[in-house]
Image (cartoon, rainbow, N blue to C red; front, side):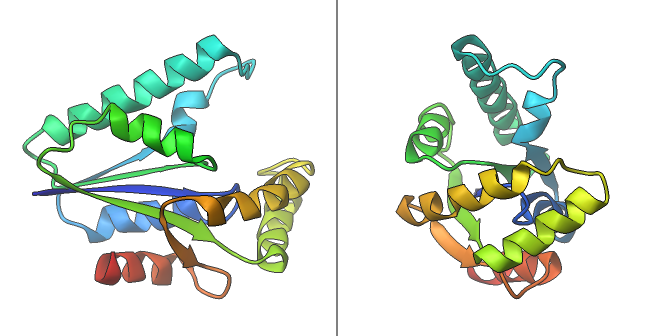
Length: 165
């Protein structure tokens, strides 16, 4: 039985760092970041590009699910609406999988500190702070396991997921 981890959270909460660690700690694992499917220039969000990205994500996830080599599929993305999660789930072949739906959440101060470090390092632009903080409350409404990462590292987050989810 394969494990599929769908890990959501607002920008800067630590999804990618946590998932990179999970990939290394879990045997025969693959990590797919939904942002890779949006890495385009110029960045354009239209109905057409949204549909294309969703189809690409589901195609890739299903191929990893089908591949006999991989036991653990780890996916992260800013899944802030239940409809995004439901859409992905409705297109996945999960008959022989355990699906783990996890939202990484944190308090406003911790998120602001993390994002400010990224802005200072040139990794992100200033407007990300407000946009990300505005989305914190959206994750409480989702049908996912909420993991508060305000006071823990990505390493600790990954360990918690392995032990408890």
